[in-house]
Length: 397
Ligand code: BGC
Figure 1 (cartoon, protein in one colour):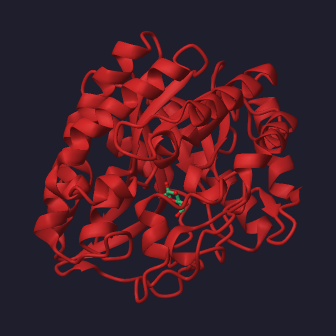
Figure 2 (cartoon, helix red, strand yellow):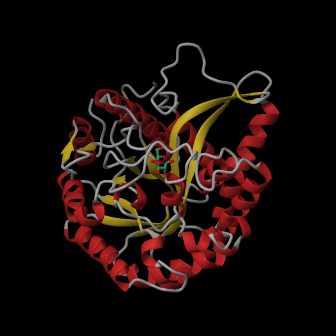
């Protein structure tokens, strides 16, 4: 890595945060498609999300943790199936809960970054055809208006849909997310509906909460060319990333979320190079993927939007490996900034060890451990490390 001797400080105003998502931490979200999927025989889910981290009740502990680390912001999601448990029926109590969370964060000096859709969809809506029929597009915009009206004065930033590319692919092509289908054409139809929903929801949020920056949070992978893979590489980038990047024109920022790289050959994924370290979930340990994706996002969008790293992290039981990963990823962010790329912040995924979707509670992405019986939180060394980097706004020498 070419950073030695270079300035290891981040620009003034660079923001530091950590992220979670409702279904992965709240517990008891029994009214959405994921809960149904977790309880479907043969879905491949390791276990039920159950009580998750009980953050619906313990949100103050979570806010205290983020404050204790001195981070600038906390990205979390609102659970649609709690706010709108039946079509058109709005739970004022659920909205009030999220208002309290935003207010509690602000009191602690933390900016609330609100994600409006993080993987889960209410079951009343999936029963109507949801993202597959496209009925969800308008319903989601309506939901965004309701939430933005309720939280507009207390949220600092809005993220519309988390990783729509992953939801479409994993749910309708790979069959690993609900509804567990394996139909590539359908996954592309769903992707189109998510793109429409993003555009409509930006307008809805801006209409109800003027002045709050809004953007998409997109999963990006450092796709690299293996011999003979040119055509596949172009096609994969097109369907997985470019069509979504095309939909971000006029947004206030682009959220970039990166975990790893993939080598692409003539038949798609070409597997791992010999000897590379592979993590629990099959991700190659490849921290340079973050900077490479920032470069690609910046080049593809022509620098039209400031970039925020809204997720980056590693699922590992080895916390020293986590520090090593984030340190190297941040070295790359410094390089990207030095090249002139406008990167405004870094968000570590995740604050807590939480429900890792089909993998259950095995993978550990958190900088804070959560006891599965008592829900007691205990910060790992990586939490203190990230905190010190954020305080210095620089990487240690
Ligand atoms: C998702 C998170 C997930 C993380 C690790 C991201 O794609 O937004 O919900 O936990 O990856 O797999």
